Length: 303
Image (cartoon, rainbow, N blue to C red):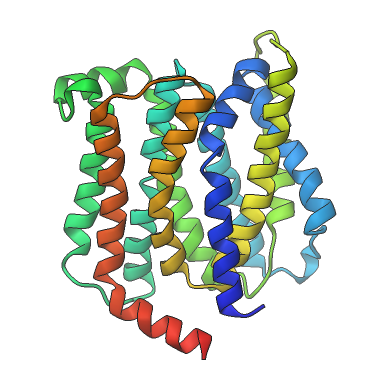
């Protein structure tokens, strides 16, 4: 696969991911945070086995098999459980916005690790993204430190998992590109994630299932978005332009919030949308600071 097609495949993943926050939350409301996540990743793994196929593990570089597995599973646990353990649909959307710090973090990490050239604007871009999250967490009052503190203390587990996930995923995006050597372990990673979740499900008390047709529909949709989305994204970051993909992902916060608000029937204040726009704009500025390197990379990869 050419770098151009791989990058395009990665962009498709961004569209699928935009629906994940609302769908995961809906499934967790029916099956519980852990049970819902376990079912989503199990079904996604099955879909990947029939679409991507089961990987030839013996051909994987050992470093990729180890670190890729650890980083991927850790991120998925952080993402799914942060949404599942949210106190409400509105808080789940806020938690999702914290997780969307990863595009800016990925660009920043790519600059540091891969020594990509970047201008000074990457710093205010990163700060703008963080400020956008602060505005989201401040509720209707915008950046209100007392409101932010109370919001975080109301559910430190969900917010902490979301932020940890953002850091872990940015590391995964950059590290796997360097060590994978063209390998694609997405199917294996989903199987491992589902196994870890089922073990946790078996070892901890679980709430009673609340089932209806909508829960099953959301389960299937979530599994498709997760499975096909990550399959496309993994191809993108392994063979495409990671900076372009990370930059294009600045569309996700706003689109995801719109879809989640509809799925969860949770109205959002103007300050939330302003914060989401700041997160997106911050990612765009981070990309702009590396624009010379991106244009050069695209020219080399498409020639």
